Image 1 (cartoon, one colour):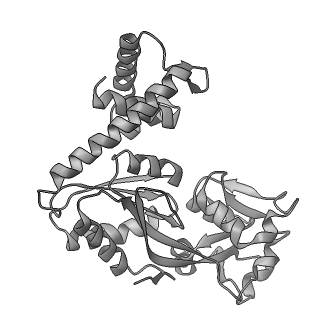
Image 2 (cartoon, helix red, strand yellow; image 1 turned 90 degrees about the horizontal axis):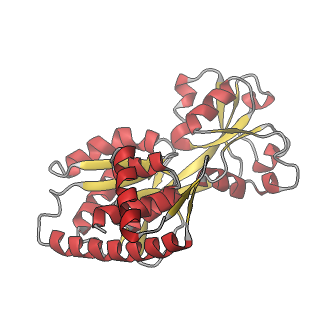
Image 3 (cartoon, one colour; image 1 turned 90 degrees about the vertical axis):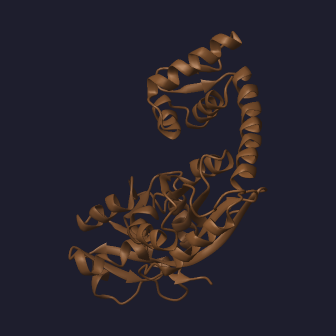
Amino acid sequence: MTLTEMRYVVALARERHFGKAADACHVSQPTLSVALKKVEGQIGAPLFERGTNDIRITPLGERIVEQARRVLAEAVKLEEIAEATGDPMTGQLRVGIIYTIAPYLLPQLIPALSREAPKMPLFLKEDFTGNLIPALKAGELDVIVIALPFSEPGLVAQPVYDEPFRVVVPATHPWAGRSAVSGDELDGQNMLLLGQGNCFRDQVLESCPRLTAHDALDHSLEGSSLETIRYMVASGAGVAVMPSTAADPLMAKEPMVKVLPFSGVQPKRTVGLVWRVTFPRPQAIDAVRAALLSCQLPGAKAIR
């Protein structure tokens, strides 16, 4: 089994979907399917059970995937040893960013990083934290931008900025004329939230504990992205909590909503960088951090 085939097998075990695994490996779905069939033919047994709507890994597949992860991790170390002898500011940098940060950060981060490291080409990947972490550990990404706190052996996390949360309500809502809203007042409102598994949904619920009470979310609706939730608020479907980078620009461009700060202690999230301890290009990480700190993000406060 080649390293490439191992990457395909590990990606399929992680994604449990041929199309998503192929996208993660930057190949077509037929290419991945043919490679997997070849591997299973060489082993003489299936690694995955193909169902109508899902893919399940077999016990043998679990053993193969676990060993493949170890081999790929060692291969990454070899690559990093080789990279350490070159110019750290000229090789491609593979950056992962979570969905609730990327649309609001990238328009500023890309030109800022181009100024910091003009000879360092970027590869960018948007995904959920739960998918970016394995990709980082497998060497598919070099650094990721996620919400902290985060701690795991072999990885380094560094905070970069704090981002306060805002309450976004329809322009016709009774709160529209107010200057602030308390977290407790959200109890009983028609809350618009991101779907299960999204870390920002969890952060909103943590910052407004009464929303986790029994029946508190009986009237909640879910959206697939912050932009979808923005349009749901504008339509009058309910109220939402959004990060300042997504919410504050609406004050000037979206007359159908009103953006309000929280009263008292401001709920917030800390955004930071995570990379492997063994990553041999600390200068590249420094360049990303410098670029992030140079961005003028609405409401955000740099951590220096």
